[in-house]
Image (cartoon, rainbow, N blue to C red; front, side, top):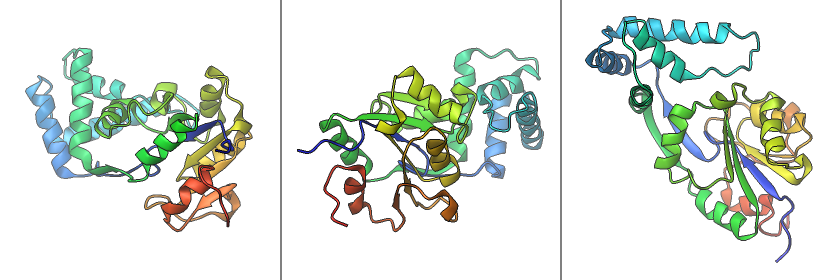
Length: 246
């Protein structure tokens, strides 16, 4: 069995390992969430809640000049209570965030290739890491539901780091904290402007997967490895798990 070309594989989550659709403009979402807040002592109408949520998100972002600063939505969900004179405990904030996410979610599924590929990488001794632009109050429960929570050597979520891809500081945090050499890692993601760009910013090669949510292909951000046609039978070879005869 030949050695893998990389020691560590760093994966994006949404659009790369999973297919997800959410709708935060849904009237039903805001009606249900307003009812949830009201039942917990913070009385809102749906319109009032949506306006307050967007205002608080904008205020959190405005506190930082860095365009790639990632806000922490738990602060927003908590503030929506405190503005109505309610002091929620940590569990209430977590439950509220989860309620909001569940009712904004249209569907979420793990791609079929993920678990077999991860098992093959583990069998060959590779490290597997997650680097995701996301909110941990949403993502950690979803990783549990998708049976991925224990699949990684480390999980890095932008809301925890307060910085998001393509800022190289986010990826460097993962590399530095785990003493990983960028040239021995491969970044795998479906967003050229986030995943490929952040990899190249630290001198790391990338594998770009064109998926349903990738957007238009940008030839200026070409990755070292690319899967553009959705033929995941070629993925093991691209990852170095099988000989690539192409």
